[in-house]
Amino acid sequence: MCSRAMMDLRLGRLKRYSLHRGILPLIVLVLVFFGYVFLSLRSQELGHPGAVTRKASPQPRVLNPTRKDVLVLSPWLAPIIWEGTFNIDILNEQFRLWNTTVGLTVFAIKKYVVFLKLFLETAEQHFMVGHKVIYYVFTDRPADVPQVPLAAGRSLVVLTVRNYSRWQDVSMHRMEMISLFSERRFLHEVDYLVCADVDMKFSDHVGVEILSALFGTLHPGFYSSSREAFPYERQPKSQAYIPRDEGDFYYMGAFFGGSVVEVRHLTKACHEAMVEDHTNGIEAVWHDESHLNKYLLYHKPTKVLSPEYMWDQQKLGWPSIMKKLRYVAVPKNHQEIRN
Image (cartoon, rainbow, N blue to C red):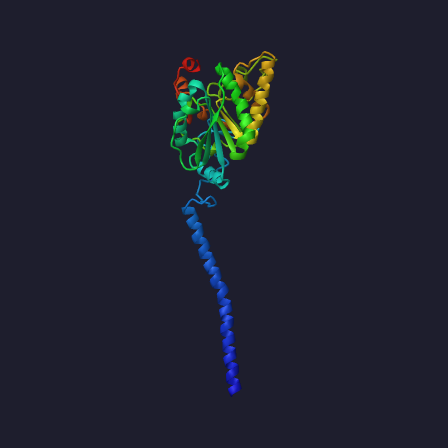
């Protein structure tokens, strides 16, 4: 009887041990699961870079385009960006996942430094809000660069450069400077470059919807014109020459960009073409803008920005086709500023 009792006791202990061994992994799994859920929610509350916030968005309808009044796709399948053609919430989510940093270059040479304060203040309100940005200010007057409060994750770098007697030369040497600094610095600091004129202001949202390998902006004065009317360079001897039976769009030199690698290719090619023209005693009709148009004709941009991203309301009003005016000219006396 004693032996039987001892055996029953051992079997009871064995069963309890087996039960404990079965429950323990289950408890660990439950704890791990709830810990993961807690940490995930906590990281989203704190804005952790790796957090993914999912937002419901309307289903795209293949047979129901969002804009029927404008061209939204180029012949080489590059999107043309108008209001109503993109969902900024989806795009913001993607670019935050990629931890994107955007560089914005602007030249404030001589009297043009007076436009810098408004440019920076409005950029803080409308340009790449919620994303990391580095403002690269090229200037010959570093002491005159204004102190503008910047949001978290945004910074300003002053790059001192020389000035030139003619405004045309200042404009053309932008390509050289952007090319040089792309190789020396920008490649190591930012993912995309946006190159903008300083005598402008941001008046509405300009965000990651513009970012692509290479983008150009439709000129507000020629977006509805035929190619024969485009003010391309027509001197056959110029490196910027485009025949009258060629051309897709006419792009504005005041707002272009892309990945740092592609912007470097563009600016380097334009600078070298301008140097060759200068050697041959030629100056293109619209200087660096003429060379930009030649480059984008044979190196197609992967996105095209509508005139919403480059507008002059004083000259052109506000036509109904323009749902938003995002980056607009500041009224000025060109003669006084340039001289």
